[in-house]
Length: 638
Image 1 (cartoon, rainbow, N blue to C red):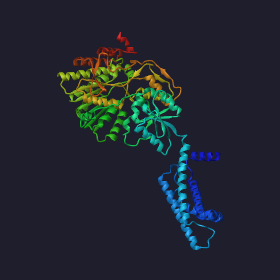
Image 2: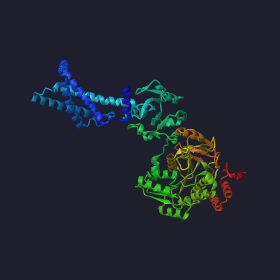
Image 3: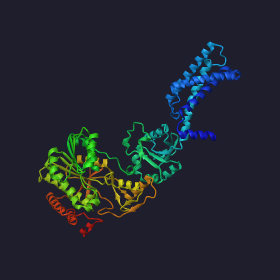
Image 4: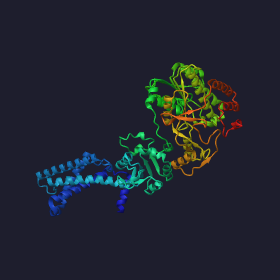
């Protein structure tokens, strides 16, 4: 037994026998099959009397079988991967070997006088063929089964969350694949009626508190989440925390749409989860037909086209085949990436990538004059709170004045709709960046009303969209945490109670497009951002997912202008629903256009003094609800 174990370990550590080893085993089987044929043909007594003569004949048969094995390359395949094709080749080789042996026997009998070798008759040849074929097949099936048994220790034990089509399809992929990467241990179901059920011979466990510990007792190392259970899994934060804390790896699809429900689902469709995959979010549904009708065949201009939101807007708008895309950003290298993306993915869409600042009025006017955009999506802005807190003059010139330049040109050149992308930080702003975006909202809304009232000549409808943090955007917290984890920590969190709303960039852009289609002008659309996430919990979960040990979380205190929580509406505002339950219209205080324009003129002039206090003081006059937090500008609120 010890010798067998050593040989097995040697074989499985090598991964495969050498070709000569397989040929040697096959020849031994052919020799043994010859003995079986001889025994059944001659009987026990004659077999014993002519043993050595029969042995000589069977050796000749074995050599002829070796020739047949060479003809069909039966020994060149890896035994553990034997298939029906391999078994067919083995059968043909056995047949050819037996036929050659039978012909040699006939020749021997015809020559006569050769008594040292006794070859097989027709009966003996048939017995030899059947025996050899069966044993060669058994050899390959046995090695394959033995390999699976010995390799199971290296396969990761898994449980599958989901017992419907998706879960069963995953299980079948594990059970039928040649490469034993995983071994199925259990299923997990939310249905209490499955408490005594077995699927494919594996027990179904009911999902309840302590399920991760139950899976640990089953030696489970990986949880595979069926795509049909992805949304339920994300919503069950307690379950996620259990598995993360238990050290069980989680694999899932980002969205159920990645599997069409018709093709075979395998574990290769799944990937190890990132923190983004675990944040609770609902499926975003938009009216694709309405968006397509608005944009197809139209001239579209996008500012900030190289940014996180802007570049995604480019991709989503290009899908609808606009007549022309005019893309503007002042960041040269990211803009080059956008140009390459358009060339690779949307070569059939006419587009122009332009490097320039939205504050350059003369250049922007030339662009509007040349391209006459029918729709403008305005995503360009300085957005980082600490940077703008230190540079209020730049926040005014880029965010406030830049928006005014693009808005005024849109009116002048007959743009049908202007969609401005704002932020939740514009609600009861506590920092320069948020206040600058609120001033942009005020200008666009008041300009829209002036057009409606006939005080400004134009046809442009101004629509504003507000939402919170987007996952994966430049400078967002998740990439920063990932980098800090790679460096071994510590993870810096400003406050233990700070919370934020998160949304995926593609989801946010879909809502922007739909808000643009439903907006009639003057609305500020607010997106339902789902459930807020505590940043310290996010940090802890990312540390657990990384598998890193002893990474510290350090609280650094709120940064200048930072809130503990972001608001999507001010206390003086309310909302009315739209046909999309994820989009609402905020009812906000209205401003007179002439007053808004006068305020912006004064604010722009003050920005050229670079007197931070004077700039922020004027901003607070324009937006009275702007109250600074953790900032040098707090003195202005007294």
